[in-house]
Length: 294
Image (cartoon, rainbow, N blue to C red; front, side, top):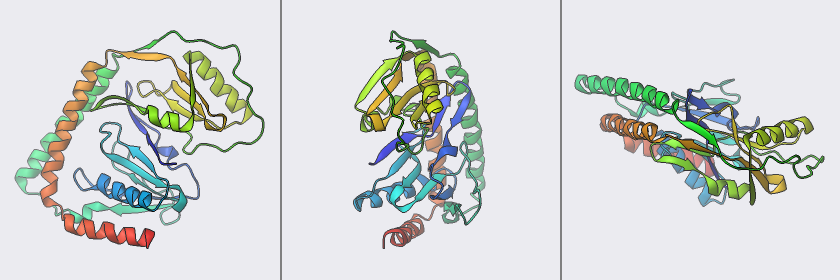
């Protein structure tokens, strides 16, 4: 099953990361991609994912929480291989280089140093970009997370005691606050569970605790606004899930700032692209695909 989700979130406390759970399989080898804005990290991963799909393989796509049109990760379960954007705000380094992970440096296809005029402009844009994201988080701190009417069941349906297959990765975001607005990946929820029941946040915490007590796996999806609070608990093995009945109020100012940040990031990428040797990057990508798929 091809899946799409987020591993980062723009929250009231700043950037929240679940990348430590990716890909979530000890046997998988992780390629950590390095390179600045505009160096083709997302396009490189998308090309790998599409090539895998063309060969009938399942793919996990990790979307960028700030810009869902961009990829931050790809995982191909059948190959036990994953790629992730290892730059800020979700910088990553190998655990044991060459054993469980390595680097993919797309910066080698970029001619540096840049011209002085472009260095100055890029430095100015980067400063504005970081300050704007600080404004985003201040605006998100003002957003209200309001509980709506939902039942608080005394007990959940009978849960099995037999061993069931876990969902990998076991934690992810299926909801994002982004430059494209508030995005909820409802189609991804329905892939995993046909029946979704709204419950109070307290009931959702109660269910999560009970699953932990019984040693039963679940997919836990935190709130992007308050990552310490659960938004979804999904039990694909039971074809059933539970959603916290909450709504956000006052998002507009933060979303406006996220759109402005995306515009600045586009300017940064436009400055870098003329220095990129995309022909060499394409050759490198095609060689990587031949290695992967023959």
